[in-house]
Image 1 (cartoon, rainbow, N blue to C red):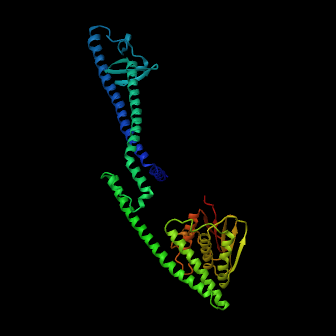
Image 2 (cartoon, rainbow, N blue to C red):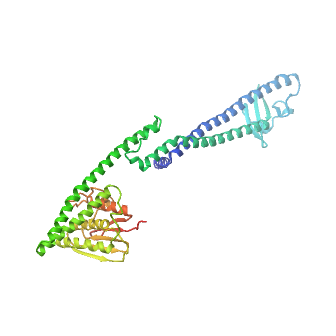
Length: 434
């Protein structure tokens, strides 16, 4: 239980802003040092009080015994001091002072603080009592000054800590702002380290320069790669499309013309997919290339024409069911890519039964009667190169990752859950982007 409390305390402390942790450290150090100093003052005052007053009262008592009483004179004491002796009836010891220990004692007599000094000589007990109201008043003033000094010291440490934390964190905050700025990823961005002295912050800036340099090189290599892919893939796709147009003018059998149309349709889909992949690889989707021109029903009809035949060839039942109207407009390429990957996934992982595409108001879902997905894989299944435990087909585990990336960019939400008794359901909910 104690270890858990300590762990929670450390976690809470570690989550505090660094500037606040500096202030807390300075204040705690001040409380420790100033508190120890204040307690030392109190202890020293009490020690000196006891030693000095004890010696003074011992000296006064000896003076009374050896100078006054010995010469037959009454004790010569001030108005705040009283003398008592067990062998002198006129100086009889009051009952409240009879049991005092020898030496100095500080006690309260009738709500009045007094010092008492007792000494026994040859069986005779002597007691000297002295009022200490004046000394106690000075002592209270001293303690009030110590307490006020302690409080002012802590407040001063807090104020100084705020100023010091601001000065200490200023270069770190500035460095964080520079690193956060998008221009730092540009090849022409100046290095950060020369702007800082050769200290810990300068070393941190130098480390950021090294990391940002590696990132810039990676982005440049990725840009060159995507440019090369764009050129190399579009050229053969254009050749395929042109060949299909020429073959359309030739005399073909119905079966041959049907296959030619499938090739032409697949070539068009391939061009759109290449454009999708390249834009996503660059980290942004150009809205001019993916305008929202199609409805959910139109995209579903297009995908159903393609996938229904493949599912029937595998012996699966396929249905596209409209459960609610949806009047949104979407990019046929992006929405088609999401829907196609989910239908392909259902086809690969379903051996018997059915696959259903449900069109909802503001989304759609794909349900199958396959083996389902283990509960612990519901999150990781959307990561790149992650495939289910019952992996099928020749895919590399990038389909659902692509679906997740498109949904994230478009502001859509995709979830997965298992069906009873078997099967899985992928649901996409649209959130219109502003």
